[in-house]
Length: 81
Image (cartoon, rainbow, N blue to C red; front, side, top):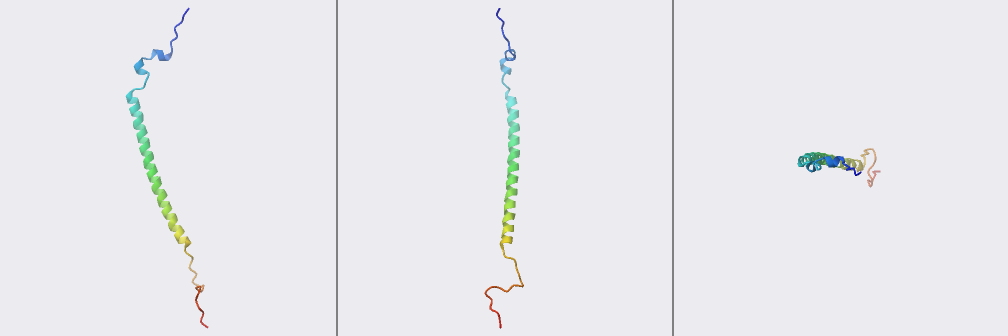
């Protein structure tokens, strides 16, 4: 007795086994939108990083200058006697 085996794939017509072009178009459009959004987010993040680096450099420049101590005699100044 010879049974013919049928699977789910055998029951689907050949033209329906592979997704349609519209299926891929929709998914590629979605991926393009996501990639575009990620690109914008990266640009904003890079701008924020650049601004923070600029602020950090300004703060370091301010903190690297010696504090003014007006009560201290300047070095190399001769005293009058």
